[in-house]
Length: 78
Image 1 (cartoon, rainbow, N blue to C red):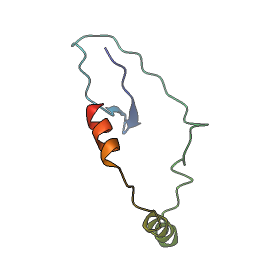
Image 2: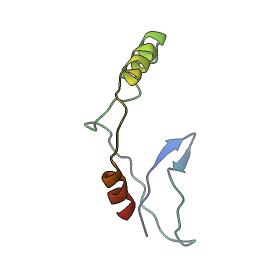
Image 3: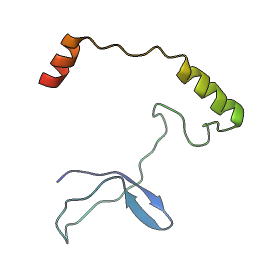
């Protein structure tokens, strides 16, 4: 059986995926600290119009990814 993650929302656990566990199996539920994880927390995420404009400008500044035929073939073979 594989482990799954999820969130506690409105008094229920909402899984991030589908559990293929048999009915009646025992589970262990414990909170996971997100402190120290890479990226921004919800509190740090800026969603003002200015911040959205900055992200759009950054995205539009990216160069297109060019993949050679050899790289495409290697990825397909993999």
